[in-house]
Image 1 (cartoon, helix red, strand yellow):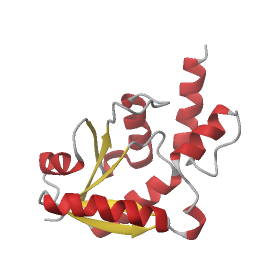
Image 2 (tube, rainbow, N blue to C red):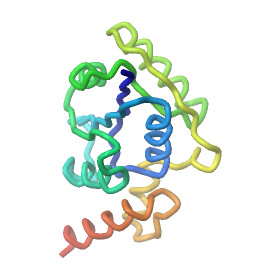
Image 3 (cartoon, one colour):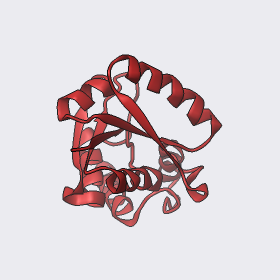
Image 4 (cartoon, rainbow, N blue to C red):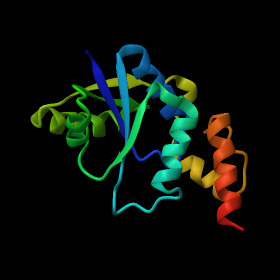
Length: 158
């Protein structure tokens, strides 16, 4: 049985993340998604909110969870043979190649999917910036995720 693990901060999950997860769902029998917690990184959304956003986009098609360790350890925890990462451009490729070497040295291979051209500039940072400016973030977020972002924003701001 082939199972993969897609990892990221998902703060918030973007259309790019969703396309990557869809690619993984199409290529593997099972897809798990781990929100990796980086204590040095301040996030806009709580882990619970990010989990809810992923579930709103994929329902039971994925196993979503958070993990505060290394991706290779998260993969081992859920029995995933492979890690899946997305590549938007040359900068991503250089970084991800280094991470893949680390993963390989720790017993896990990494599979890459390349982003479609229209998603090459979609990232969580740009989505957060649009949200903070009060702009429409539909370029970055699916309808389900955008609705939750709006709900969380109202809850946090009164």
